Amino acid sequence: FSLWGSDHVALVGVDLQRERFQNRVNIGIAPQINRSILAPEYEPLPEPTFSIEGNFLSRVSWAGVYAQDQISLLDSGALKLLLAIRYDYVEQKVSEVGTPASEDERNSFSQFTYRGGLLYEVLEQWALYASAASSFLPPPNGTLTLNGDALGPETGFQVEVGTKLRLLDDQFHLTASLFQLDKDDVTIADPINPLFGINGGRQRSRGFELDFIGLLSESWRVIGGYALTDTE
Picture (cartoon, rainbow, N blue to C red):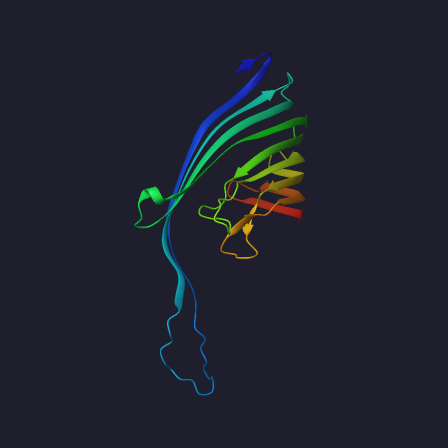
């Protein structure tokens, strides 16, 4: 559609996800066994004593609503602006099989995320682009801190600049890009007790990516890629 002298391509939608799985946990230490490899005694091995036992049911419900608009800023259509927004709501439940629903461990998370980009077609076969996007990821269901508190969600922000090239009547496509991705509150194992988790601060990734697609015939396609990433 056209609005304020520009062409728009709008997209709105909803996506729903539901996950359900059961996990039986038995954690213990096996007793020490002394056997001689020269004169082995084939006796029944003693059973380990389990210090932690459980049968857990995990459920995750995820709902997302999003809207996107691609705007042509020039009459030629060579310059395009992309704007997008998304809202996510996630509910997590963990319960021990056989216990009342009122005893479920429940956590919920919600977040707005955004995405924007510019693409300029220098030539019909050559384009330059830049983009930025935020991200949101809830912690693994059932993961708690050593104190029994719920973990916070992971958030991120990525910026990317690159170029796209089409050659030989669109038979070969080449994309090269530079990117930086920052993540905050990443869930990692607690160094004191790896059975629990902590929000591990910030992680940063920077790098270069090169992707190649070649159409050799109607039946054959060549796909290649190279990535160089530095993380901290």
